[in-house]
View (spheres, rainbow, N blue to C red):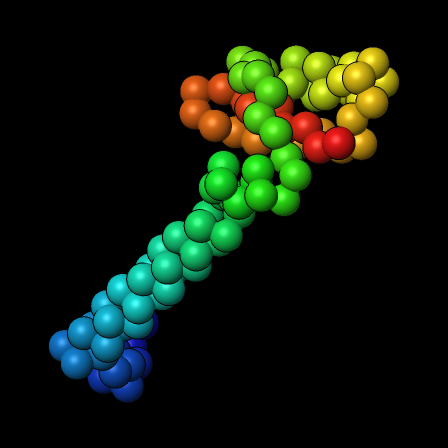
Length: 97
């Protein structure tokens, strides 16, 4: 390349680097805040779940076992709905009459 090409390319200043870092930090902060809000909304507390008619039944190690137990409860015991929610370290089967 010719030396004249190098003279035309503007090198980023320190101010540009600082602004870029601030924008990246703000993006990470927004992403973290969104994750926390979504997690808080998705995880229903047991008090609100029982108030809306849900009953905690039993915990299962795998989602597949929880779903098959929930399906069996629908057929055998006359429940209307079931839900398998992750409740560390297992999946909790919630039933609704």
